[in-house]
Image (cartoon, rainbow, N blue to C red; front, side, top):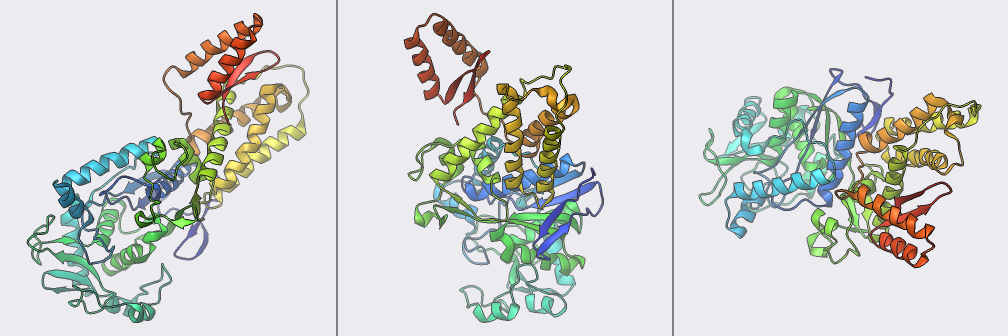
Length: 496
């Protein structure tokens, strides 16, 4: 691991802690993936980009990350608890498909959208339906330890019994007495000893589409069970980081901790990380409010709340401009500002690849050198401070000022000396492309076509055909490009 004092906010301890992997240089990270019964939306994009960036930065500082992100294709019921229909089975009935057709369709579309957002693929992407034997074995282990009970073919986790020797609620800060007094009896839950108990295995009715044989009869696993089974299989009984959205903190992650302690006598993860929620124009996103926007609607601009389409990299950049633990509000104004900021950084990335160092007798400027060194240090400090991408981006804009000054001739590259000049360029490129995962979005043969148009522009300018000059400039602007007339050359940039 490179010399970094990385700290992350641990939801479990409610404070920032120095990150110390259990078995360095290896890092095990499990992140709750999507329930695949619909197209990916903004709520999927934020954790995907957040933990992709965590993965990228840990890898950059020399750690070997095994990143496991599951696919939930069974067991997630409509009420997010133990009542209602299976979300995928319900969708299958509506569309007259097999449940696995639904799961495959939306898994594929999720992968497509995550690729557009330039997220790295996880090391392992297990599916709940592919790990039924492991989940049955886990239920048996919990029963053996005395923390579960079977009723009419269903098995429930006994929260009250568990809480006698453990602290149910330590992750979310919930108090069990308050949970009990605030809970209400739900249809179909009378067989539970207490309303706070949760299903490990559910008995399946004859019409239930997704079911398997088990020691307790035909049924299906509880939603919370799958993550414990799959994380322990691929990362061990305890691993480094468990991530997910704030909405999963309770009951999902709280139940995972209970399950892990019940059968393995330890918390499943050392550090718990949660990204905060997304709002749309200040309101919680929801289908009933008409502000539910999936990613394809964002990319095409087809939703009624959108004034235009916003590219995948604009969305990625926008998500990174807020710290992952802060709420993030989507609006056309905010997305337009993000589009401008993204294009500024990408214009800088393109320029940085054009700049070269030519040695001369020019004296170095120690003040300029110190400024560059400090900016780079500050960018790393931001990432080391709980992956603060918002601050890191601010420091990158300071680096960009130096790059633009060299490009326009206001600063000579020689004032930095060759080593610092190379560090300036490489650090900017590394942060943009590798750590933040931002890429230049361009069509095939874009550079060749633009260079051809710029040559026509230059020829028209030489011939003083100003009508043609204006026509080419206006045409490029309509396509999202601006012509840059400089002292010694003509160049283009993305319109910001």
